[in-house]
Length: 197
Image (tube, rainbow, N blue to C red; front, side, top):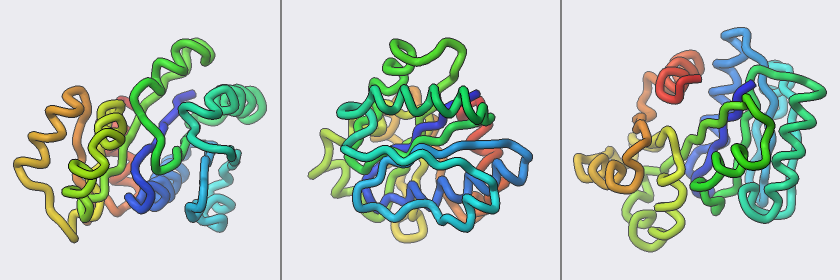
């Protein structure tokens, strides 16, 4: 079993990306469970979840990675015991910090469970993210194995975008979510390649 943790600010497109990924996984014959940590966010489409036969576990009360990290570890353990899916997808709140999440699982999680982190970045708000929200943004991308640049049709990434991401997250693979990756199968294949899923 592998865990894919999604972070990114509210409105970045996490839920849409996760919805596509679920479809891609289902089409590839893989099973998954979802842990949502929503506070005022629109959840993943129920019809899609039913069609893909996905188990959803809601967590409430704040940021998955800090305030209720014990609940996250427990939820993962329950899902592993009761459902044993190929993947567990965790959607964190918009203000959750990504760095340290893998350490949390190494310390308190079960052995042999691989954790990958994905940060979805809204390119239409790039300048605001790297200036006004710099502290949180740095922790989000800094803890990511993969950074997905979303809404590139509104604001295309520049050389400076990639340079900034190399400075803040040198270990992360950066993927531009262009038209080709709107296809669920293509998105799943690209994430699997970049995050060794």
